[in-house]
Amino acid sequence: MDFAIARRRMVEQQIVARGVTDVRVIEAMKNIPRHLFVEVGLQAHAYSDSSLPIGAKQTISQPYMVAAMSAALELQGHERILEVGTGSGYQTALLAKLAKRVYSVERIAILAGRARKVLDQLQLSNVNIKIADGTIGWKDQAPFDGILVAAGSPEIPLSYLEQLDVGGKLVLPVGDRDQQILVRVIRQQDGSFKKEQLMGCRFVPLIGEQGWEDEGNG
Ligand code: SAH
Image 1 (cartoon, rainbow, N blue to C red):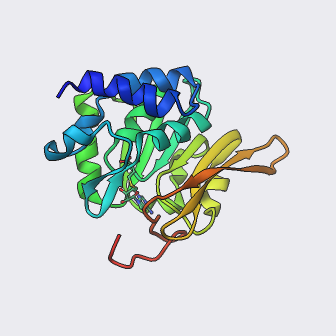
Image 2 (cartoon, helix red, strand yellow):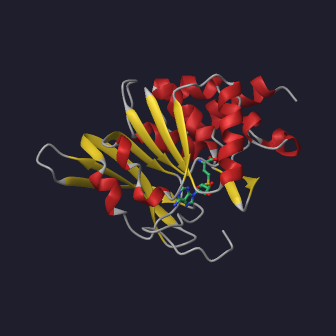
């Protein structure tokens, strides 16, 4: 399997063709070897138009969703970003290329450890990963210019609004346990929050103090 060809096709057919125009997002996705973020047995599917299992009942998000969420942050390169739900680390890698520094929180230690290894292998040194409940954010490092949450929440955790800088953007799925709407919240100069609904989506649940209860099944 030629991963470079598969990757170029992924970017053309799933990302550009569906309307993602952010040149930096497109360039970064052309360069990040997504197959390294899944187990060897699934590498042949790494560039297909879907999410894939990564163990611990979690998934690596669909390429289009990763692109759309990243583009919604409208990054220029100087930003400090909070990511909740490191998972495989693929989205983390993209953010590391698009922003200055990424603070990523994952509640499942084995996933955080694997993600760390791949990010190190790719020499992405501007990423801090913490094993913790990300629903409370990362107070010590706040405020953030962008917050990206890769798991679905019943409502918008207050901690994220508190930890968002003026002009900062929060992108997260909000809704039921198995179906959500991707929402973008922008903190305005006057302290108010502008809220937009971007599209429907399906993420694994955000589990924690300000998210869903752990039912032991994901
Ligand atoms: N962007 C990741 C998505 C992984 S799925 C990828 O593409 O690989 C979502 C991840 O969120 C899972 O790894 C899950 O363990 C994690 N998660 C769920 N609730 C969390 C919480 N409260 N804090 C941190 N991580 C959480």
